[in-house]
Amino acid sequence: MKYDHILIRYAELSLKGKNRKQFEQKLERNIREVLKGFEAIKVKRSFGRMFVKLNGEEETAVCQKLQTVFGIHSLSPSIKIALSEKEISEGALWAAEDALPSGRGTFKVSVRRTNKDFPIGSQEMNKVIGGHILRNMNEISVDVHNPDVELKVEIRSEAAYISSKVLKGAGGLPVGTSGKVLLMLSGGIDSPVAGYLALKRGVTLEAIHFHSPPFTNERAKQKVEDLVKVLTQFGGTIKLHMVPFTDVQTLIHKQVPDNYEMTVTRRFMLRIAEKIAKVNHAKAIVNGESLGQVASQTLDSMYTINSVTNLPVLRPLITMDKLEVIEQARKIGTYEISILPYEDCCTIFLPAESKTKPDKDKAERYESFLNLEEIIDDAVNRTTSHEFTASADEESEINELF
Ligand code: ATP
Ligand code: MG
Image (cartoon, rainbow, N blue to C red; front, side):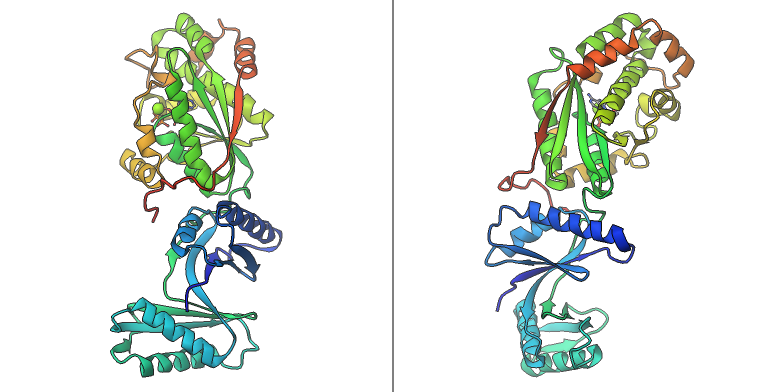
């Protein structure tokens, strides 16, 4: 015998009616997409579960890919067994022997019977299966509270599925069920993590990056593209908008007093992001800000910067400490890319001192000497966009997600 299926559990309780259908359809599509490199597998949806038939593909590799899919609560390598008491007992014995190769240890059987036509109730089946295992493995005993192995047996209408371990899924909602957002992606540590967390809530992601050649070089651009590629492992296809920002920054540098340069720069970024968001039907902007982390991330700063747009600005990292963000960045595989030392457009020109409490009226007054519309339109018109899709054979750089 051999584990021939992966049983996938997803959050079913909170979902009703139309939402549920959409959730399941997207989840199934995202699962197929992430497994497209495994040609033999088959994906099937069946009453509150999904099943991946391995057809000889490697169980561990398939599970690893599935663990990147948002909307999956947990998964279990399973064996599919015909609906007979004898065959189910044999299958469970095999799974117990497989999980306890020394033949020693404790176990528990948990039968879940959704097929009410199956003649034996779940309590009774627990006993039947447990008895069979006890008779065939001498040095094994039952422990219902803290067993070494829990054998899960699902008796469904088409077959029974037996598994001995549960792997944690990525949780969240399937990508594509929550509308589209535009991620402000720098080359730093924070914004890729913000993008990951936004994807976790089921959004479709596009990203925008401001670059200032020749002050920022090609490698800084490459770095951002590499970060997008990592995010595609969780989000499928992601469009990246590259905004040429040199002229805007040069102009601000000339016209705006040093201590308001950062604030005004951020306000321009947000205005441009808003335009790009609207053209691409994104309903919100996401950034990597965390309260109080740096001068531009005080509440006063956020107020003054945020006031240029009516679009919701989502900040998934708002309550997180830097160390927590770094830990998350390591897990998803963006950290090593983010710490590469290429100059970001925000670090050029910037004075040592920025106001931590920038005043909105003052920012507006300084901006009144600039031709806002023209500057913004020019940057938007020269923006280039490129789509990235997760490639099936790309070596996963995700480090032990769970
Ligand atoms: P990060 O680690 O994401 O760079 P940070 O802690 O360095 O964040 P800031 O430099 O103040 O913080 O940037 C705050 C947020 O503004 C970033 O998280 C990102 O969302 C956005 N941002 C900053 N620079 C850029 C850029 N060049 N292109 C796009 N977005 C940017
Ligand atoms: Mg930064």
